[in-house]
Length: 373
Image (cartoon, rainbow, N blue to C red):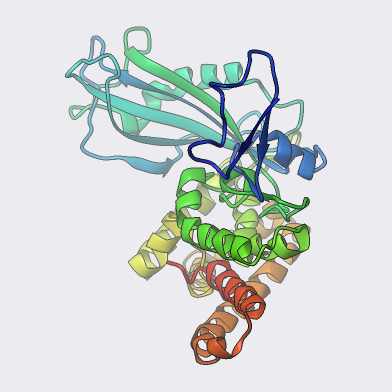
């Protein structure tokens, strides 16, 4: 077949001259896999393993039909009003939206989501969507200014949404192949809490693009050379304890169906008392050692009776693993403060390869400690 050379842009795929049914060979020095959570390259790199965590999301963009229940003067990031039931704890979010059919009526987008594992005994998305429709009238985020609630039988929906977002504890995904680098959701950089793949992609865009450019300038494309572009990040790994705290294993005995709601309430009350310096980084998926320690210490002071049942709920193994990652979060925080001051002083004395490696190490300390906030 025809051969197209390039790394994207004009000429990378010469489809006009390629005959129908023929093969088009694309040649480049590096393939950036940005094919998302279900990238076939990523799945092969992970050995087709089952994800350790799954977030299921269902929702809709809808406008009032029969009752004036849309109030777009506020939004919810995470809200819960029901206890644990059937091995699930549901959370909600809502925000203003525009009707997709051109109507000038105000519309409301609302999502219901749950943190799960990939156990085949879990319900289908159809069943979870039924729960969404059943619970929707009780959700305060979709009540009108006068308290009107949506009539599910009469609301006018622009679209319905349902999806699955997998997550893996071995993230970011270590580089497994020569000349292939994951980016975005396929890299596993997104938080196992927010699953904010686009936000994560933007947050790491400068680090990733600069690292790729410097690697190609030095003709570094083997997996051992690219590995430094996908470093271990303790700021990401410590989030798994929170994910573990908010999901219910299938068949687990639940003595207090409100335990997750109590933890969520205590966590946000504590961060509110500690101020925006603690709250805002957390809401933007940036975990810093100082804020995390202050929040945990604050919860122990403000809600001391909640700590023992929380530790029992999470279990000893996740707590020990979290302790290991938190210790490294502290180490990365200290290392970033030192290396960001020292590297500019000695950088000119380093050869190009050493510069590349030390810049990537400083970036790992920076992003791994939440220093990019």
